[in-house]
Length: 209
Image 1 (cartoon, rainbow, N blue to C red):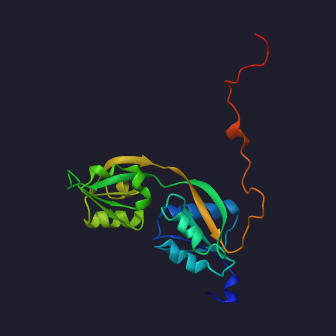
Image 2 (cartoon, rainbow, N blue to C red):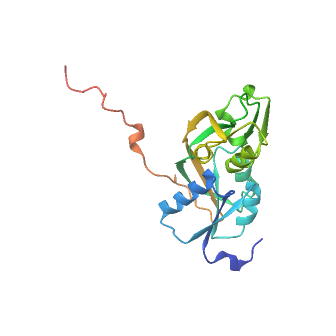
Image 3 (cartoon, helix red, strand yellow):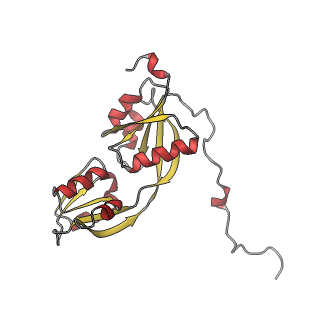
């Protein structure tokens, strides 16, 4: 566990890498929203490793998309030391299923498990689990599989090598922020959004007709 001296200094965000992930973009936007300019990002490939990096550190936070299948395990692993301290809504990067141009009938798909809900698994002979979407793009271009669910931006970057199979676009999702200083103290923590629960302009008038 880090020493007490590690509790001082620049804020560190720990999130899924490598650079170019939806996690990185969401973390950067979150810090801008919070008005924090002096911070650094440490990338991890496994969120349990991320927990180890923030334990005992008041200035370190883990950011994880709620779509990831092990959110509950990350929340529970060190339940008396690491706490959910915030959540926020922010979209993914624009997503798409891309294929290599020479793969006219793609059969193998590189996929981050947290994005499996976007595809029909029965349409693929083999699905290869990958750590993050930038790695999907890299390995797709290297020819490891016929197609991959990754960021749409890679199509524009490699128009001679890739073709579009299915465009998903940006998807609004939630992000969980973990820290070592417990924040909840009995009252709901959130932003009031009464407009979510109000009826629109089609409300019936109370005046007599």
